[in-house]
Image (cartoon, rainbow, N blue to C red; front, side, top):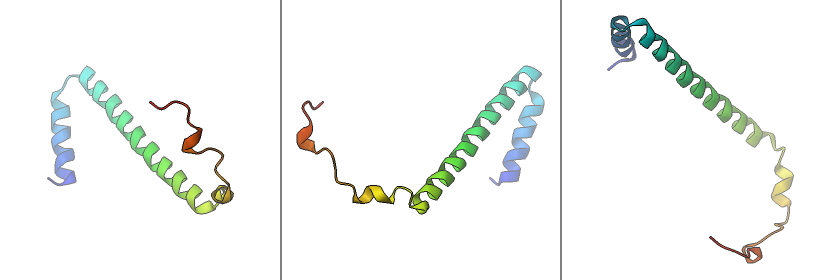
Length: 74
């Protein structure tokens, strides 16, 4: 199904619902939209930080601990 068809079908369903259910759906859509936006922002930040080289100095850093340092394993 195409995007426009899905939107039209959804709107048709919404028009048949009572007001309290429409408010509930609006809240859920806002929640989904916010999660989507946060995901885009998070990916953008990750991309920028990986390209910036800000933490490049850590690649040359010697490991402080090894597996031999573990006293208890779970």
